[in-house]
Image 1 (cartoon, rainbow, N blue to C red):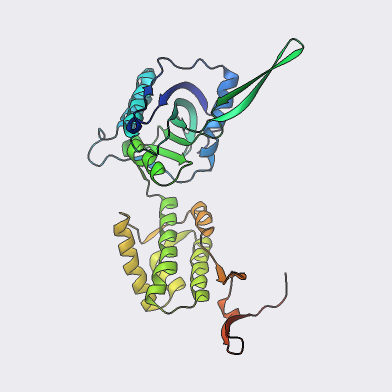
Image 2: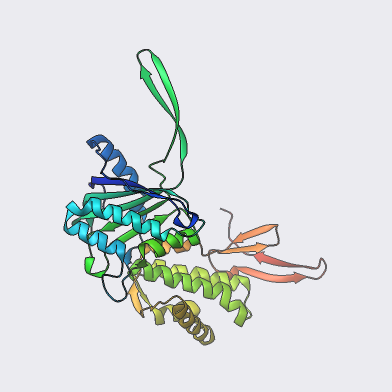
Length: 346
């Protein structure tokens, strides 16, 4: 996705209160009249975060395309741009009706229409939805004659909107290509993705790589200690081998992964059972082979903790051969120890 040459064509703003808390909805009656300079500044600020997003979503409609409201408003707007204002108001009303959880903050919703966006080497239009819930104080300084005038104001930082969604006019028959971010976590984040947008991740290489590495990490850190007597150094070794497999290969093969990383029949059998439960719980269907996403590997590698924590005194980072670490017990001092072998200090 390349948004460098995108152009902000239309924009409207609405105030979305929390319906569950008795707050109001205020919709605008007209679009902003924005000049070229401000259009470029605003476009760059609004689209900046999407340049680093890799996970792609689609609107969810289990039985028919009429199921998802935001999908239909976007579909009509892409087909007939003159419906932008009407559908921008409809989207605001739908967001208001979805805002019933007491923790959801009130704020302004900015509905934007972009042209000249590039995805998969195709030029398409896009609709952006941005919600500003957090206000900041800023000093407005103006020169009037030979004197400065100062005014302390409150407003939204255009570089720090709390929630964002970009719907590209591609892959329409499967629910469009959708990118999303949310600065909140937990129930607030679920509200934006599920209650309002009703989107689901696309089962592409990024999603499959990310999910399988997450499955592997949970199996090694949570399931193995329950079933097997395994030293922490061996667990860390399995974590390192898992990430290394994905780094060293461009495509994933489940049987090859099990043999190279897990090796033992008992571990492989346990891993398959755990994988079946994980897939059922998360409504997933892992293929036996898929392409590996380097972006997903980089993301997951950060949470594959190869750290051996010893009381509150030492942290040992293990990145290589576990056979160079020897564990023992010193009866004289009544404490466990690790002996580490190496050639030279770095």
